Image (cartoon, rainbow, N blue to C red; front, side, top):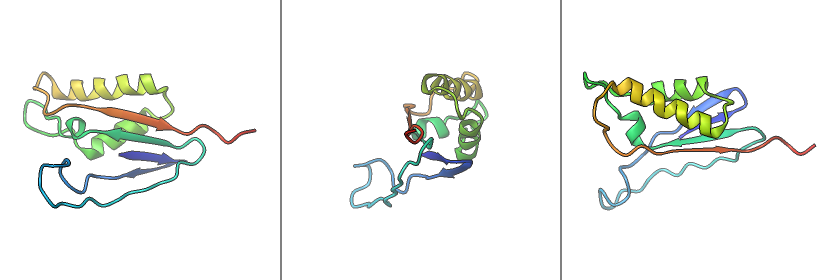
Length: 111
């Protein structure tokens, strides 16, 4: 996930493979409290692990930069931007995995 808190961005990478893939692995627990106007973006590995025709992955850094550049957009627009960028990066390469995106925003403080 990527979280925007004010002007800062925090990236949290998966600590274990998907549930059930390797028995006995215990994930690191990450918690946060969304402040007013914070955004939490959850993207599956199918986004960051998407490769281009040369086998280069989209990657976490590119994903974080993309999230930063699309910041402030409506959630539906944000989704179109992210999926469009990943598809454009792939340039016709087959999807590496399923691709899931969730955008959670907390509105401003009550007036």
